[in-house]
Every structure is written in structure tokens, then in C-alpha cells.
Image (cartoon, rainbow over all chains, first blue to last red):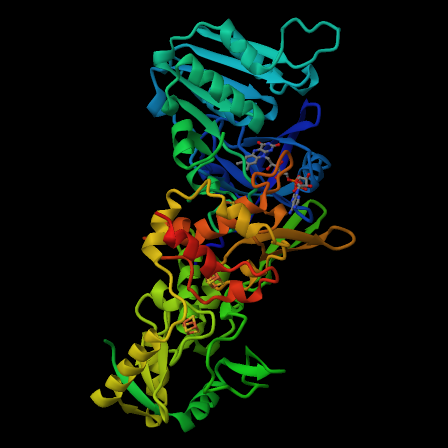
Length: 277
Length: 345
Ligand SMILES: Cc1cc2nc3c(=O)[nH]c(=O)nc-3n(C[C@H](O)[C@H](O)[C@H](O)COP(=O)(O)OP(=O)(O)OC[C@H]3O[C@@H](n4cnc5c(N)ncnc54)[C@H](O)[C@@H]3O)c2cc1C
Ligand code: SF4
Ligand code: SF4
Ligand code: FES
């Protein structure tokens, strides 16, 4: 008998953290000790989360694979499943199947300078990669992180951000579209407005971009204008997903399935698929 | 060519009846004037029909809606029960186009990650095909290479050809062979004369098709047709009923949804067919990635003639059965669309 590819594994919610307005981070452990030990993933991969009675939703793994024994998901409560998840408490049981998808390149970009550009909850999959890169810090060049949200309360992963800013040969710049007048010290403007503020050796830089579609669109245009090669711009695509396994049809871009062949693509690949970015 | 047998036409029902204790035997039958697959337990098999049932046999492998799991959650515990259907079934009278449709579904559900639900139903079903002596009304299987006679690129355990008073029976699998061996007294060995007769019927049938599609030209045209005005023009009368997808023997798209009981302690996870022609198909929280009907029609045609072949070693994703044209209330016509593409330079 073959394994049922759609069967969720039971996981326990160990911890819930309020990450930002409307976003919670869940620390999860598999109930089955074998699964807990063997579970491995690459940054950029995702899984299908089950809230029993509500349904399934695809969510990126935001923890880094260097953390063993547990994993984390950061979830914005936007609809049926994600809002039901927000109502769960520590100790509750949910379901998870994965990891799915290809994940970000890692070995391929060693010795490069790395530029991260993220908007809102889009930092979640990149956080996994950023933390993995910092765990092998000397294998990468300069690491620059540009992160924005519509307003300050929507910025996620504040603890990570202050830690990253302290690390050597790295910089973190924050921005918001609008700020209330109480004490926002950083940039105001779209995340692209941070690009002129950093020094880059573009020849040797790989850019990772993740966020709402409109942000990805404009950042890619900015990066191309700055002289980035198409295959050095890496992004993740979001599509409606039901199965995560290349069966249900929903997530296709041309002949590729985002769930199987993505969600990580270079701009070059997306252009070849005829996708309008 | 595999071994051929002869079955007297008058003995077909006897052969099928003998299978009934072990299998749910499913046959084409007329209900209120419409041909459809039905259980032989309460339907008389139609032996000399032309064309194919409007509804393909897809639902026996990939039902319109099926239960995948039931979940029970109570006091910090959760249990998961999967519902895998292993009923034994024989389907007789499946036309070559539909045998090819099953092959297409195989390539989706049985490749890379095996879908246990589809796999169990497929494993437990014997396919008995029936070649076509004459073209059906809207079919263009001949130019798709999927009919009117089945070949190795169609899925079958036994394949019947109507020779008038007898059926020529080709054996396509071990399971098919065993069924014949167990009823060996009903079958005779086919002679060359009978095989020649079958070849002659095939040749004549192929010459009689009203519609043909130049597959290679369509594929070539699609490499340049992305921004063609034809998608908007041909889709402008679409009323978004999804019928073309739901009736299609090769369409495989589905949604997964949980249905909870009142107290939300027990729930059932179901999957059900979805249609790429419907607006919600690509709907996400922040946006819809296919906003216009032109993009959705383009998706349907590209999936059949470009994406499925790209994913599955060049195998075309349309059987040429013509059903989508037949059911469309807005007269969106696949042969017409393929004709426009085939004529493009
Ligand atoms: C690879 C990938 C990774 C992701 N990672 C994350 C992550 O790390 N964190 C995160 O928060 N999110 C992530 N997402 C997004 C997340 O999957 C969605 O927000 C989630 O699926 C929403 O599910 P829901 O049940 O809560 O919302 P739903 O109730 O499904 O609704 C969402 C919205 O879509 C609409 N909608 C849904 N279905 C239909 C339909 N059939 N027809 C019309 N409208 C419809 C609803 O009206 C609603 O506005 C990711 C998505 C992908 C594809
Ligand atoms: S499309 Fe071809 S194989 Fe199918 S019923 Fe019509 S003639 Fe027969
Ligand atoms: S696309 Fe139309 S003609 Fe082709 S297999 Fe589907 S229903 Fe038949
Ligand atoms: S999510 Fe089902 S095919 Fe990609």
C-alpha cells in the first residue's frame, strides 16, 4: 500500500507569538517522534496546514532548518482557515503535510553578496533563508536586508531584525508607507525607495524578493534598471493552491506548477514562462 | 499485436453476467433516450450503439465529489480516517477516446506522487473498450490519434471490435486475459479473416470523419498565440457554467474542502471537481491571477495542447471527443478554435 499523500501529520502548537497586527507565529512539533526527528526542509519550501473542521492552507516554513525538533509558521489571518488557526491555543493539535516545493538556492549563491527585499508577511520565507545564511556567515559576502510594510504595526520579526542589524558585514533598512507621528525613526516610502540608500556591487549580488505581487513587480523593474541580471533576481510566487502536489491544477504558470516546480523562480524563468510580472 | 479472441455477439451478456458476482458490471445503457453508463444490476447493456455516452466514465476513477478523510477532534486528541474505495468494477463499452482520457488521468494521478484514491479505484477496475465502427457526430479523435480504434496509447484490459455477428476481442493486460481464461468456453481463437475484417472497418471509419484537426500546426501556433485576439473573441459569450471542464474526460482539477458538523468536533474532508473557466479558480486573498474570460479560455486550450504534452512526454491532453462543444450553451466550439489556430501562419 502506498502512503496517502494527502494525509496530514498531527502537530502540537507549542507556542504562539503575536508577530504583528493580524499575524501570529506558531511553533510546532510533530506528535510522531520519528517524523519529528526526520523532518527536514529547505528555506522557501512550504506545507499544507490543516485546521480540523476549517480546511487547509499553504504556508511557508519561516524557521530555519538549523533549528531541529520544531518548526515555525507565521500566518496572517485573512480567511476561513487562517482565521481559525488564529483562534487556536498553545497545546492544541493541528495538521501539517510537507515540505513541498523547490526552496531557495543556497550553495549556488555562496560567496555572493546577498540583497533581500521583503514586504509585510513576505519576510516569512526569507527569514528562514536569512537565518540559515547567518548560521554559515563566512560563506557569504555582504548581506543587505530591505524591509517594508504599510505601517509600523505590520512589521514582522522585530527580534530577528535587531539581531541581524548587529551582525558584521550586514545592514538592515526599514521603511513604512505611512507612519503615525509617534516616534518612527526610519524611512517613509515604498520599499523600493531604500534601494538608492545602500551600496551594492551589483555584479556580485543575488537579490531575493518576496512580498505582495505589486511590490514584486516594481522591485524587479528597479533591480533590472540597476543592472541586475535576470537570473540573479530570485522571487517566490503565490498562486491559489489546493493540493501542493501537482494534482489539483490550480497553481500553474504556463506548463509549470508553482507547488512542484516553484514557488521559487528566477525572473529569467518567469519571463520564459510568459508570466507578466 | 497481442492475442485475439472471438466472442459471439449473443454471448456478450452471458459473459458479463458471469462477472456480476465478483464485480459491479457497468455498461452503456439508454435512460430516457440518453446513453449513459449504468450498473448492469438494473440496466440492459446497449450492444449496438453508435457514438459515446455524453458523460465519460471518468467519475468511476475520479468522482465529482469524494470523501477523502474524516477527522475527529476531542479533548486535545485528533484522529484521522482515510476513505479509500476498493470496490471491484468492470466497465464494458468504453470508447477509445475515453480509454485515452483514462490514460491522461493516469499520467496526472499516478506520476511522481501517487494519488491513493485514484490508484485504488483504477487498480480495482477492469476496462473493456469498444472500438468505433463509425465516427460520432462531433468527434475528431482520428486526427488526435486517440481513436476511433484503440492502440497502446489507450488504456484497456480487453478491447472489443464489432464485426457484425461477433466481437473480435484483443487482450491488453494480464487481468483481461484471466477473465477470458475463466470463461474460455465462450471464446474462440480469431482467424486472419476476422482480423482483416476489423482492419477494414477501421480504415473505412477513419475516412468518414467530418472534423479533423492538424495537431502539429495547433501546437506550433500556440507558441505564438499568447496575445492573439482570438481568446477574447471566442470567449466573449461564455456564461461561466464550467460545463466544458466537467464533461471533459481529461480534466482533472479539484478543490479540497472541509465540512464540519455543528460542534466542529467531527469534520469530513472532500474533494470535488473544479473548472478553470470559473472566476474563483485562481482567486486568492489579495488578488485573482486570471481576471478575464479570455485568459481562462486560453488556459483551457493551452493546458490540453501545450502544458499536458510538456509535462507528460508529448502526449496530447485532448481526446477529440467533442463533448465540450456539445454541452456549451454559448456555442463555444473547440474544433472551430483549433481550426483558427491550425490556419495561422
Ligand atoms: C506557497 C505559498 C506560501 C504561503 N506562505 C504564507 C505564509 O507563510 N504566511 C501566510 O500568512 N500566508 C501564506 N500564504 C498565503 C496563504 O496560503 C493564504 O492566505 C491562505 O490560503 C488563505 O486561506 P484562508 O482559508 O484563510 O482564506 P480563504 O477563506 O480561502 O479566503 C481567502 C480569500 O480568497 C477568497 N476566495 C477563496 N476561495 C475562493 C473561491 N473559490 N472563489 C472566490 N474567492 C475565493 C476569499 O473571498 C478570501 O477573500 C502562502 C501561499 C502560498 C501559495
Ligand atoms: S471521438 Fe472517436 S473514439 Fe470517441 S466516440 Fe467519437 S468516433 Fe468513437
Ligand atoms: S477538450 Fe473537449 S474535445 Fe477535448 S477531450 Fe475535453 S471535452 Fe473532449
Ligand atoms: S497546488 Fe495543486 S497543482 Fe499546485
